[in-house]
Amino acid sequence: MRDETFGSETIQLLETFFMNSTDGIYIVDKSGRVLLANPSILEYLGASYEELVGIKLDNIIQSGVYRGSPVLETIKTKKVFTGLVKARNGAEIMSTSKPVFNEKGELELVITNCRPLRIIDSFYKQYYGDRIVKKKNIEEPFRPRLEKELAYQSPKMQRLMKVVNAVADTDSTVIIYGETGTGKGLIAQYLHEKSNRRNKRLVDINCAAIPENLIESELFGYEKGAFTGASAEGKLGLFEIAHEGTLFLDEIGEMPLHLQAKLLKVLDAGYVLRLGGTVYHKVNARVIVATNKNLLEMVKQGKFREDLYYRLNVFSVTMPSLRDRKDDIGILSQRIVDELNFKYSQEKSVSDKTIEKLIQFDWPGNVRQLRNIIERIYVLSKGPIIDIDSVSLLFDDEDLFKEERNDTPEPAGMDNFGDLTCKQTLKEYLEQVERNYIEGVLRECDGCVTKAAEILGVHRTSLYKKKTADKVSV
Image 1 (tube, rainbow, N blue to C red):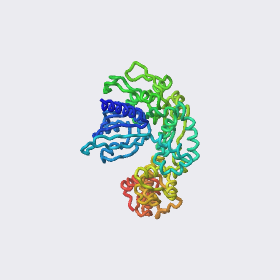
Image 2 (image 1 turned 180 degrees about the vertical axis):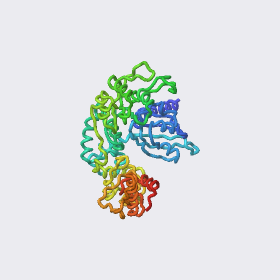
Image 3 (image 1 turned 90 degrees about the vertical axis):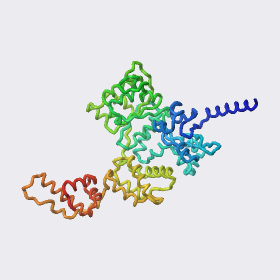
Image 4 (image 1 turned 30 degrees about the horizontal axis):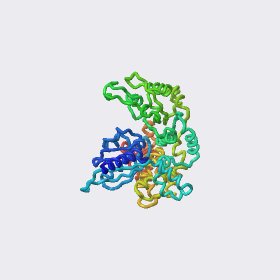
């Protein structure tokens, strides 16, 4: 009887510990199916009990609840593994998975405990204070992703972030302008994570990526049987999913006019009417939008509703292109390398000479392109220093604008563009001049198409086509 009482008390203590632990804890069987999950992990992931318990990890990851899984690595290696998990609400979580074996030495369970990086980061700052600089090697892996990716020192970015920080802790709508790849989505995440809605969901939708006939059901949801092919249970719209959180509408300029009217009504009234429904549902979500187009110009052209524009335009910020903030290329490059160092357990750095070379490019793909290029030369650079020899590989990337040059060679044989016989049409004569010029440049470049394309200011593919079509010889 005593043993039974002791066992009951122990079970109650374990249950109390499991349910009240500030660490997220969940238990998975050897097949990868979640058996138990405590309230903390549900909060950190922004997920419901039904989305985790009883579901296999592969399905959970595929459904977008989070990315990355130390558990799967532990199941594979049967060893303790620590890694990062990225939740759909933007949170980064450090997770440690430990295998549990049965009496035969076979894997039986995997127990995982998790803690958000923001908590770890806050601890280091509070504990070390001024000594935090001395602990850089410890803190660096846990630096919040937004802090790493929003690295800047240029005056333009400083002015931008001053406005963003002032607006962040409000419910005001914000329009984020900027070219593709500048980081508009990062600013939206930053606004969310610095707001009083940070513990709720950040839901994003790219208005240009979803077919026009589906955007309405995605945003506002639908009742069962609303249309052919609709789910028998109906579906919540993103406005309802983002309730008390933030809804980020990317590429808002691509939204059809008839949906703009419905969006305006929701913003004004705070209620959503699902497709096929008769009941209005209250929603309270902060709305942030982004676009690479001039919305005011679209209003003048009749392509964007004027009333919606003024409803959204409480605050607007413009993310500068990378070519307009070249002072940031150095710090951005090193931050990207630091991430790669952490990922691949290496210690590489970018040389000053390499940074100078990177600054010479115009970066039409902005920060997104810089990130890809840095990863490329990181992988191809064998030593600890990423130097100028690695960057020479960039000349094979036809997406890069040609490097500015003051030493462009004068192609040989260009004094005779073509024989003027006065019997050719203007079109025929110009085609001959073009062909002769291309042949001269190619000869000057020893037949190197890539180098010739840089001088001519065209893509390599275009030059290849011209060589074939016009039968250009070298």
